[in-house]
Length: 335
Image (cartoon, rainbow, N blue to C red; front, side):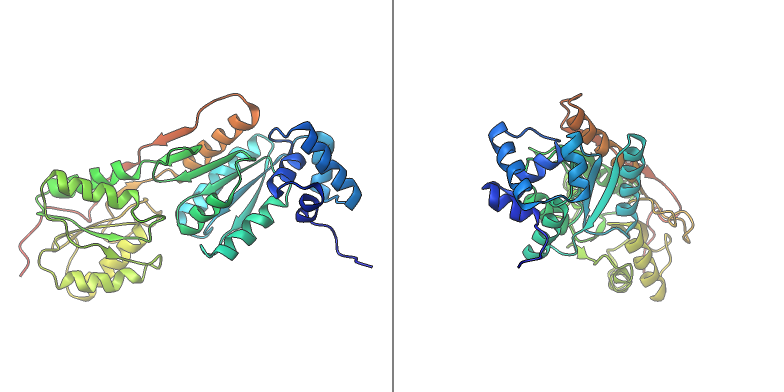
């Protein structure tokens, strides 16, 4: 006798439909044809498939749970975005469950997405900040309402965006306006081939007809900026550096200091995100303030409109704000 509890995949196989279709029936958050609904409900009854959450959904026809899929939950931007989602969801009576996709490996993504879809969900919000988030978004069926949160717009998606490209372009313009001949860029790992921060940096340099230095790639670890700071200290043309986030900028500043250079007297350094430590750093860091919590709230609002049928918006964008502090200044000749 097989004592294994039936899974959502077993239900899908018995009903002759996809797993997302079963999820749609369980959540009641999107339309399913009467014939398919009958097939799924018959399979559920035959297999005695009754997770507690799904059982409640089958009675109410409406789930009060949304899933958040993210590549990380500990980094500042990720954590703040999830906080914004959770606060907005709680105010509307929804519960938030979080799934972490640890890598873009196909098996890992499939495992995480499948585990998420076994729950009774009203909809899904994906943090499309990195390759795992992008991969997870690509695995999700459109059967459930899905909202993507990111720094670059992508057509065909319901999404909330922080306009990173425009903010990065403005920050680069600021550094050029101080009199720097060019701006070096330390890139954080992009979600795709090119991210908005790098796009805006390059766009500003091209418009100003300034030299475009080779990209300097950091990891997500702040310490990776230290070695880059050492290398920049050996390059006399590096008088201004735009880093992909504030933690990397702090590492670069540490590396410059270890080589005897001062910020901003010898090299101007700017970050991105306005991490809580940015204004406490020495010197305080010029950066771009990103309202991650607001991004989360806007993303949930788009999802809520899709669930309630109260709106047709597919897109919400906000431009981050530049914050000028003491880590950037006009260039001085380096010996």
